Structures are given as C-alpha cells and as structure tokens.
Amino acid sequence: MHTPQDVQDALDSDLAWRRVEMHTILDDARSARGPRQEALTRAGVALLYAHWEGYTKNALSLYVKFVSRRRLKLNELTPGFAGMAADSEVRRRQKLSNQRHRTALVQLLMDDSDSRLSIPSKEVNTQGNLNSDLCRELLETFGLDFEPFVTKTALIDYNLLRARNDIAHGRWASVRIDDYESLNSQVLTLIETVRNLVLTAVDNGGYRRAG
Image 1 (cartoon, helix red, strand yellow):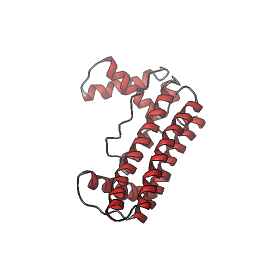
Image 2: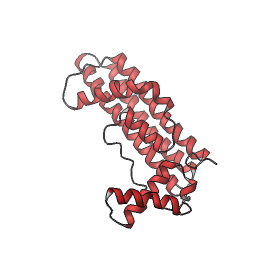
Image 3: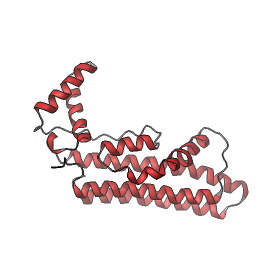
Image 4: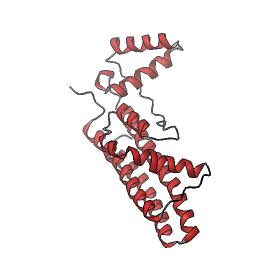
C-alpha cells in the first residue's frame, strides 16, 4: 500500500467480488419459493454478516498498512496511531509488568516524540463479532468518523449480528424475502461507507495530527 491509488484499487477489488456474491444470492432467493427461499435467505443473512465484518477488517487493515508505510514521527500521527506505534515499541524492547509498561509508554511519548516508530501492520482484530460498539472503537482509534453509523447501530447489532448468530448456532429464524432484500441493500451501504471513510482519510491525511 504505497500510494492512495493502491489503497483504492485494493478496496474496490475487494468490494467488487463481494457485491457480485451478494447480488447472486439475492437473485437466487428472489426466484425461489417455499423452503428453498427460506434456506437461501437464512444462508444469505450469515453471508451478509461475513461480508460486513470481512470488508471492514480488510479495509481497516489496508489503511493501517498504508499509514505504517508513511514512516511518520510520533508527533505527526493522530493519538490512535501514535499509541499503537509507541505500545509496539515498548513491547519490543522488553517484557514489563502492566504498570512498568504504562510508565515506559508515557516516557517514550514524552521523550521520543520525534522518533519514527513502526506501526504494526498486522490484520485489525474484529474478534469475529463486529458489533456497533467494536465498530465505533476501531473507527475512533484510527481517527475515522463513526457518525454515519450512529443511526445504524440497531441494524448492525440486531438485524445483522444477532440474526447471524441465531442462524450460525442452529436456531430457527425465519427471514422473509422483503426483509432480506432490505438487509442486503443496507449492508452494501455500510460496506461502501467504510470504503469511503478510509479513502477520504487516505486522501486527506486523516492519520496526521492536526496542526
């Protein structure tokens, strides 16, 4: 992820195959009837959740990798990224107790703010359970705006995550075709919103500390 165009290409490529798969299942469900339609809509809900978590995880991981390759100083980064870099550096240097780790972290931030530390570019951990609270935590850590999702928390937590959990754990949950059509459309909007937030931050330097 060396350039903003690299990030956009990767995000668009990841979105493209997901969109095709989502529409394919939706078309099959629309043309089916009875038990076959119910089976497809139930399976489709689990798939929609997988795309919500999978795309968000991949998009944020690409963003972190992009920022990591900027090799910025601690005092040039937003608090979330600066904290990630400093925390990783302290852990790399030595194994410390929690209190000593916190002290070393503060000392590093105070004394070495001009340092260019590596930001860990490993995959972002969505914990296999991307609810609205975790989504907020991750976005805010990376300096991204959660506001577009404020009115979508019930959708994420109940219509998507809880329904997926019920289905994945073998519990019966009927999903009507019109409800599935609506959910499919809304999940695609969620995914596109994540894409746009990341691209805006990449283009506008949203990972840089203001001032």
